[in-house]
Amino acid sequence: MALAKKGTRLIKVNDVEYRWVVHPDDEPGMAIVVECADNPGQRMITWVEYGNIISPWLVRRAILHALDRGWYPQQKGAEIVFRLEGIVSREDNWTGVPSEHKAAWQDVFQASQESLHLSAPCPVCGVTALCRWYYIGGKPIKTEIEGVTFVLNGDLWEWCSNCHIFQHYSCLVPRWWSCDLDVNTEKLTALPKAIEKAMKARDISFYSNSSKIASF
Image 1 (cartoon, one colour):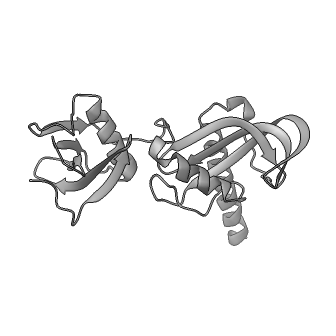
Image 2 (image 1 turned 60 degrees about the horizontal axis):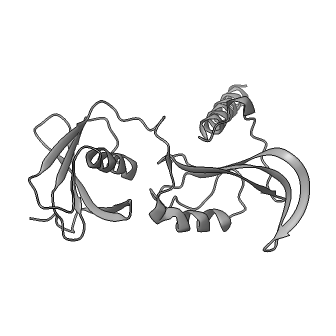
Image 3 (image 1 turned 120 degrees about the horizontal axis):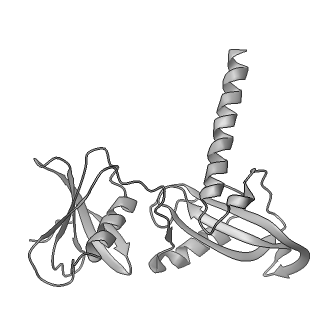
């Protein structure tokens, strides 16, 4: 019997739409139950330990893990079971923008001239955690494209701090860009980890200083 629509959620991974739900059970942990949304075939269950946050990012991780290990969601077959051990961390699990979300991702960033933090939700996970940061490393220029003035060559990182979807590429830096974040540029890679570290350090410093002022 297919999963009921009521009480379940949809997620798209690699252009395939899946329906999923979480079932707590007698076995220690929680079961992420997934099948194709249309014409479901083989059902997949991935057990995760209590303490994990069941988010779209984790469900996507479970789906990709199962596909790599012999799950055929569009073929009829016996239920297949997997397990993700421990607390599954996103710290080192950065992923490029999925093809099915690229258009929406580009629309969100192109529509905004906000600096470090964007107010729009992430097109992939739905959480308001989108960020962008330009590295200015090229010679000054001045050119206009579709009404936007660009003044420098550089690099751009766009990412979601929640689901760790990102993209990085060389680009032209627009005139409106301004950001005082102190990033260790020697640590920069294609992943935005060095930028995230700088953001966390600034937040810690801000709250520490605020606490000192309040206590004074």
